[in-house]
Length: 414
Image (cartoon, rainbow, N blue to C red; front, top):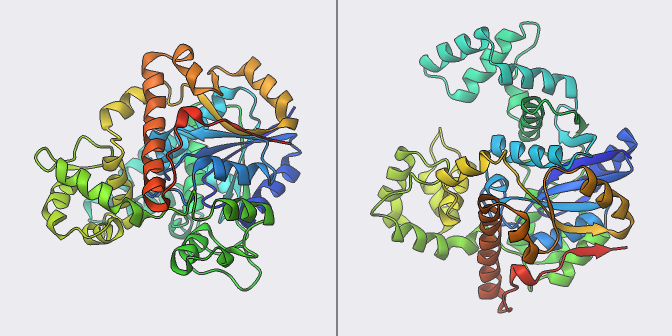
């Protein structure tokens, strides 16, 4: 049995994702594909457009065989922690042969070569990096020049390291190296609009997830997605449109404002990625708060991008704290694999995982406390708490009853 692993958000699932699933399967000849997917909040520091079970459903209808949830502390983390958490989960399943990801460069040798330098940090790399930082360059600029010094035959790494999928791919490779994992990384060249493209394509290329989210926000009409998503995925969105989504970052505005106001006395340095400088800046600018996106724009700087600010604010809202992250990393990142959904034809895959996995598979939350250690169960409760917060947003926005996480059943499709 050969098994592909894909790390994803599917926010929402679009034609480019389907192309990636199909192309990876052809390239590796794998029998099954396992997805590790973010829950209801994403790596960019925003709520997912639709809840995790609906997004898992879209993936299962389009080539995925099993969808597992990436725990909150990694799904909302920096590229480093996002990658380490997801790769650790795959590695612990004991049956994953390949991790496949899209990249702008489409060359695994280049990505792995850079990952090895970043992982080992040889003396030449360290000396050039420190020198350039002392000269006043930003960290990405200094890192690019330090890598160029290690690869004098190259033309530099500015464009490669400026591409988000390349950056994530390098982090996946680094995570595999750090674990001395036997899983093989495989990259598929991105075939679509730029990752940051905010407009839907008209030239036949795959539209970005950002473009789809932007269109849905601005048009407030699901027809914007016609032709840019597989019909089956669009059908799932249609079923839940204005019932279980969409949710946008603006929907977090009041919750975040209350959270920030309630903690002004102690500041925000307890939260992951929040420095004392950023905490002070939040406090200074808080009287000017109008909304989540407006506040991100208000406090971003040349050194701190909108995405990084958004992620930090989400950490504050969701109580993602430095002390807890350290405790969870000490558990070797991921101590359980929670199933969101699977295909009936993947039953042999589940049997293989149960035989080879070093962590328990969680299919019923009611059973989790007896399967996990105290710290591992606390980590799962953090996932559940965040899911319930998302549910309250849906209730407030669409006047629907809250779906308790303990009452949700895993998806099973033919």
